[in-house]
Image (tube, rainbow, N blue to C red; front, side, top):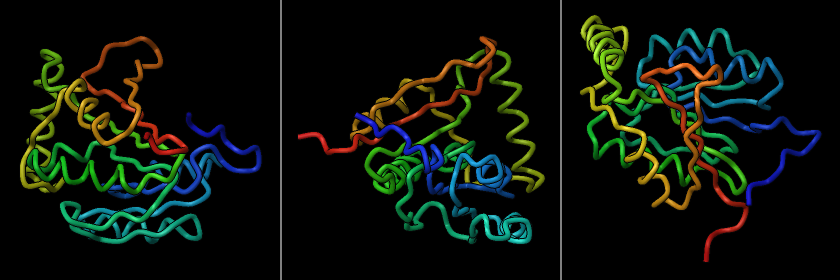
Length: 187
């Protein structure tokens, strides 16, 4: 069972945005009143500098090595377009640390690209390769994971996963997973 949001508390609570970049999503969630505050982590110092200027009292941000950073507890953990920049073992480690950081009744949101979605996947992967080549995005590699495998990994970490459909019913190579931490541990 996952906790219903407290009427006085925003639905997402405290947000940990891993791979935050310039923090647009985390800042938006706080501005909309959907989150109380955020902590943004990224390995690109240039992006963190921009986020720190914009964040004000909404949150904090710091430059870290995402492959080994300790993740602080949060009600919601975001991994938005970040896993594919690391090799599989580093992805697994990040998923384990992210799952461990979720408070009881909280959630992990993961957005990634399905590498087997046909032509649109190939185009998106080519764009990602270009973005890393010109240093717009950083990462040691590009390794994309299909949704079924990612769901299996998250399920093995004690989370209940759900693949969300596109809100307009459109098709896209990008997918969004929600992984929920039960309020009480499984026995």
